[in-house]
Length: 104
Image 1 (cartoon, rainbow, N blue to C red):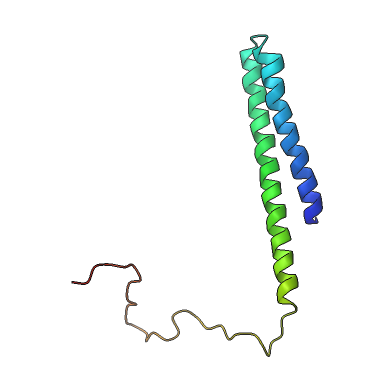
Image 2 (cartoon, one colour):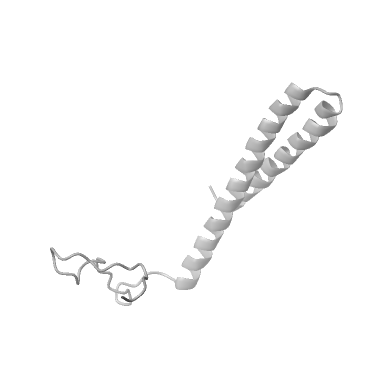
């Protein structure tokens, strides 16, 4: 699923959520149908949050694609050597704390 499709569906869900809130106020609350208004508000919340989530995922996918395009194809000769974080510490000794504290 491309990020454009996610973004379009996200905007549609966002609009449906706002429309559900408008319907909640215009149709139900002005006619004093409180139970129906709560149900419509719940539906609107789920639609709105789903649309926001899809928009965030689409933006992250677009950013990942841009970064991949800028970095270029991975070349093993130019790749940094990644080593485990604890490779330099001898076995059996606790690592020092990284939390700053006052010198005593």
